[in-house]
Image (cartoon, rainbow, N blue to C red; front, top):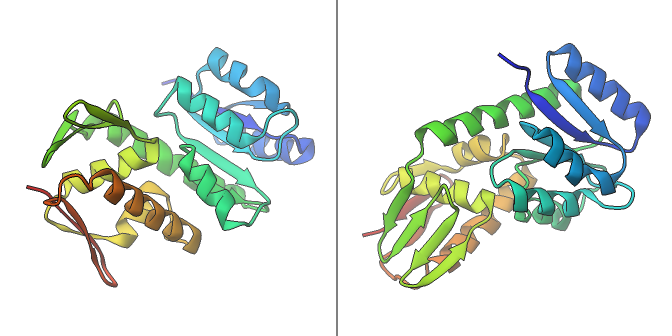
Length: 228
């Protein structure tokens, strides 16, 4: 079995060397790039299993790179590394299709656990998910990340698609909020919780044309997805 290939974008060379060597010692294959302007071309060349992107990079930042990667591959997991602490930066990262967000300084054990969780989720998504869900007047093609009603189509982000798939697979059941956070984001931290609120609001707006569809908040517990 071939080693998991990681594309690692980091311009702090001392930190990058430590992280690269630590991951390689765990059996991962790591390709590191310090110039943000070269990362997307490198992605095309090596086709990694997962991307770890610092946000503050020369020539092109991690957000721009993630946006370009999502145009090429909707499913490859992306982890952002950053020293930034603003909530809006976290929201932006997830909106662009990022799967996880780690603040510097971080421990190698934390990074490795996050990588392992995302790779497990990727396998589960590709083996267990249905291709299409009927949601009231809507049709959701989860592999294509498209929500349609009549002739209108809405392209969902990777995270929106993951969340809607989870709701569809647990229709009429109460889903624990912590389960959603741990499965889709890897932890139930405050910042991840805020992002879940953002995505629930987005999905409600996308499904508003059918009043029979509801994402009901069960206070203190989670959500129940109702659709005829």
